[in-house]
Image (cartoon, rainbow, N blue to C red; front, top):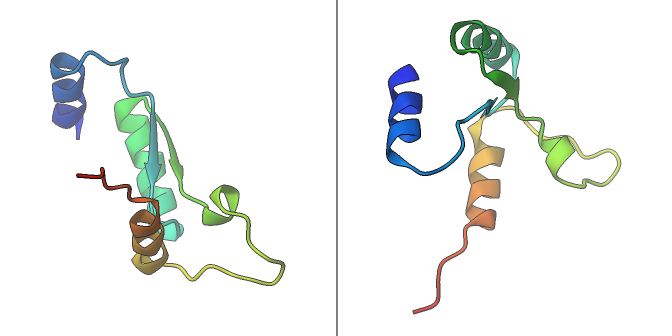
Length: 81
């Protein structure tokens, strides 16, 4: 991961990455976030979909990759030819 961050900083004219979000959330992701934060110095958090999407009362998001893939597909934007 550190090599990827170093590559990004050396090859792209962008500011350094300071935040990292892990998806999906859960106990394992929380432990990973804590470790990555300690090792990299980044602000690392887990994704909470209810913070990003307005949901009706009583609707719960299942844990796992499926909601993330569905949201990623919905947010995809193809350029018109």
